Image (cartoon, rainbow, N blue to C red):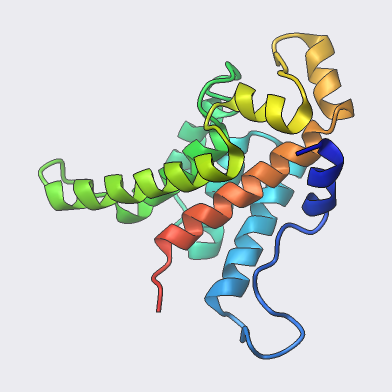
Length: 186
């Protein structure tokens, strides 16, 4: 997929709800997923830091704010501390799942198993959509190259090369997937 194809998608993150009829009523699951995806996208455009942008979008719209988790997510961006490893947007989604479905009781093995299963679903759906879970691989696929954020030239090239469009799109999609897994299906 080329940057221009991604940019065409990101200016209006994928909407799955129907807005021109009452098929998707106000407050519907579909509309909430659209809002969460747009918030993940907008957060990353405005503030950067993919992990925290995805986590905050889900926390805010599903009403389970946890400032400690948001702070803890900060250094996970850009493939864990900007190292290009596991995508921070994926990590933010998995963190949100853990915050909602996990347990503070280490002995609660059932919660562990359920949360792990949901994390696996998040991982697999994200990987299927992005082609990889690794930040550098996703950058290469969507932007045509890897960016080393420790180098000033690469940081600037990320902006001019479409990164400020593509990475927010990845955040929006990760936020949508995680929220879709978290929200009950009726």
